[in-house]
Length: 272
Image (cartoon, rainbow, N blue to C red; front, side, top):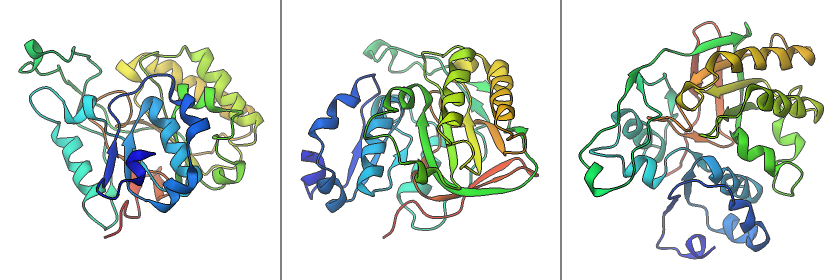
């Protein structure tokens, strides 16, 4: 609240994630956030902060944090730098966002002895189309699957109508939830009526590629239960708990092109 109130602060960059940001909810003044719009960015447990911004009517940015990105050993990835620049410093449509050519889920301790040791990056594959034939457009909403699970049922979880014709983006954490947990969670979205409201799903590469193939089977299985075999689902996106990453602005219009297996953000994330 102090950071939002302070006019000298132009952006709030979360330090890292966790599992208890929901404890802030009783102390948040949504009118203060609404009256003091500024950049808010982070991921993982910071899904809570993003939904606080969403509730206040502010578009925030699912993406970079201090320790995982700006404090990257040796230097921040060029891919991440590019999307920070395109998203925060240009008031033009963000455009087509390809998958990063390399990726890592390796964790190095934040310690002086590691400051000149880079993480090991591996070659990446492109987007995978799990299902769907039509091009889908919608406004972005979502976050960390694990965190969204414990926000459900609180006053912070988005209204059902906020999922209307949206593109739902999801990613899994270093907890690496078992496929049956993903199945339960997605089925819950179906029973809430959310899956039948959205226009498509953008799913990130699972952390360290754990359950990579199993998650694809799970997603198709649950969507079929709700008669959604044609809902466009793009998989292996570069955001979330692997590096490098792009940034996803909440509420901004985006597109999943199933024919070209591409993802594009059609609007700008900021205004000058």
